[in-house]
Image 1 (spheres, one colour):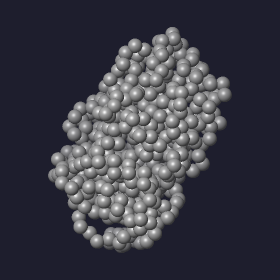
Image 2 (spheres, one colour):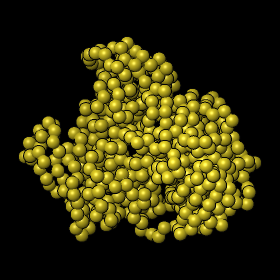
Image 3 (cartoon, one colour):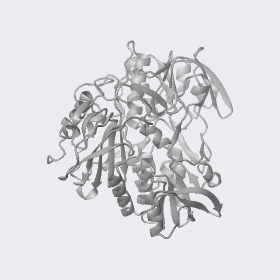
Image 4 (spheres, one colour):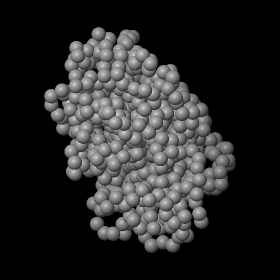
Length: 594
C-alpha cells in the first residue's frame, strides 16, 4: 500500500497505575531540552537544559537576574502496558487535526467572552485607574497567558532596560493552564483555593507541590513604576485592549468603566482562546448550571458549584481530550460523594477523533473503571432548568455502530430520551480571540480561525502573534494553528526574541502535546493526529500486520525514555521519507527493558 503524504506519527500509550514505576517518557526531552529551531535551550517556562545556560533565563529587574520559574506540569510517570501502540498516521490532505477538534460539534455554538460571576464580587482592576498606566511602553503584550509570559521573559533577557506591559482581562497573574483539567481536581477545598490563583499550590502527579502562577507578584514591576519611566515588566490585571491602531502604534485599554490610551514600540497579540458554548444550553448557563473551564476563575466557580450541586450526576458534554480530562478529574473529586459523572458525546468512544478505534475503545473501558458513565452516539438537542437541576434532551445519532448499540438498548435511530444532571460541564472545543486583531485590520484565517503570521510570528510591521491565536506556517505541515501548551511556550519565546532581537528567526519547532486522563491514560504526540487518517500501529507485543511502503514522514513521537529516543524522533523528522514504516518504528526502542 502506498500513501501519498504522511501527516503525523504519534505515540499513544494506555497505561496502568499498577506499573507506576516503569513508565519511560520520551517527551521529557521536548520539555527539558532545547528547541533546535529556536535556540539551544528550552524556554524558561520549562526545565533548563543541563548543557547550556538559557539565553532567556532572565532578568527580573534592571540590575538583577532572577531564577527561572518552575517547570510546567509534566505528564505523570506511570507504567505502560504491553498493548501500548506506536501509531503511524498518514493522509493525502484535508483539514488539520486542530480544526477538526474545534469544529467537531455540529450543533450551533455560542462563544462567550465572560461567563457568570463566581460567588463573590469581581476584584477591581490593577491598576485601579488610567492614571496608574504608563503612557508609553517599548513592548505591549495583549494577553497574560503562557505565550505572553514566555515572550516577556525573552524580551527582558535581551532588553533589560525595556518597559514591557502585559494586559490581561483576568485578575490573576500569568499562570499555567494544563492543571485546570488535571491535577487541580485532586486538591481538597479547591473552591476556596482557586479563587486566588496567585497563591494556589497544587500537588502534581509525581507528588511534588507546585505553584499555579509562573511567578509571584514581586517578580513584576508595578504599572505605576512603568509610568514613571522605570524599566521592568508589569501586568495590567483586569484590563482589556479594546482597539489597536497598528499604523499609529497606539492601543486603547478599558476596565471598570475606565478607558486609557497608550503608545507602544512593538506589540504581541497572545489573546488565546475561549470556550465554545452550546446554544441549547443557554438557559442552564444563565442559571449557573452549565459551565466551561478555561480559566482559574471558572475552575473555582465549578468547584464551588460542585459542592452545592444536588446528589446525582454531573454531565460532561464532549468527547475530546479536554472533556475526557475533565470527566476523569471530576470522577476523582466526587469519588467519595453522592455524585457521579456521565459523559455525553457524538462519537463511538471518547477520543475517537484522536485515537485509532481499538485505543479509543480501550480508553472508554478505562474511563468506566474510574466511575464515568458513558453515553456514546448521543447529542444534546435541548435543555431546560427545573429547580436546581438541568434536564437534557438527548438524541441518539445515526450510524452503523450507533444503530447496533441502540438495538441492544432497545432504542431506534433518532430516539430521544432525557437526562437530569445537577451540573453540566461544556467541553466542546474553543474559538480564537481575534476580535481585536480583526478590528485592527489584521488578517484572520477563514478556516483555521487564528491571526495569520509568517514564520517569524509577525502579522504586520511591529505586530506579532503567538500561542493558540497564531496561525503560522512551518515547512513540514504547512499553515496550521496549534492549541498546545508546548507551542505557547515556544512561539511566545520566539516572538519575544524576534521583537527584541536584531536578527529574526523562523519558527521551526514541532510542538508536542500531552493529555492525561486520570491516572491510567496518557497520550503524547507530535504532528497532525487524526483518527480519520490511515493509521498503522506497531505494538510492543508480537503481532502480524501488513507492511506499508513508500511514505513521507512529516512528524514523529515516541513513548520511551528521553535522550536517544528523542534524537531518533528528530532523525525521523529530518529524514522524512521511508520506504517502509517499520524501518521508522525500529528507531524507537519499544522492547528494551528499563
